Image (cartoon, rainbow, N blue to C red; front, side, top):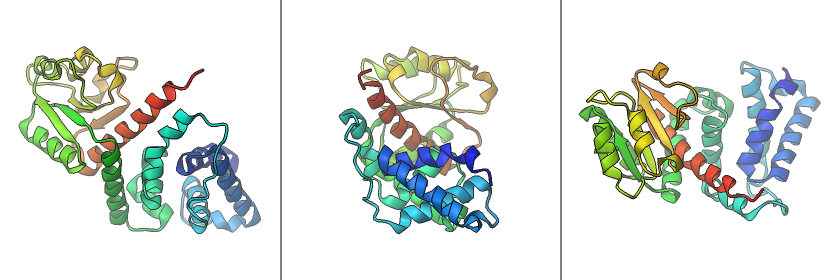
Length: 265
């Protein structure tokens, strides 16, 4: 197992999970010490990176969850940015970060935690609702297919958010906003009148401060460097759990990014 190649990942994960640089680093060190003491700890059928996270989470789960420590030198704005994450109950928090931050699939997370995929999906749903309860917002849906628009609306409301409006064209999307931007935009790329959802998003006042999830059958049409850059991109045919996960990720990480950007330099 290449420890050196995978070392940055659990350290990043540990800091996010514990909401503390000091405590996160201590957990990461404890993980490496456990592996060094017993190389067979990372043996078995898992891929090396999965095995590393499995060892880490077994150590994390064996200790008091609140042993996160406090970074006295941390900026209060950054501490506020972590409150949403800290509010998530422990296991859903770990599952959310494995999915959103580290990019593991639900199946891979199940292998890491030695739990069935269905339980992992239930935990992701719990996380989505917990995040929504703290970051509840209005969502603009830009989608020309009525059935898909209805499905998206159901997903948004199931997470506890509200739908500002469903717009089928670029013109209607821009008109739907007025002088008050939504908290999140779900946008198709190719709209009914031949216009572009990307163009619509670009024209919405204040949208540059709003997270956007693009849904498209033509991801190749999105060119690198276009604004807003498609950080969150779902290709059709999408799964309900995928869309819900992207909504939660977009809102959570956007809020952290906004608070991070406010830290004096």
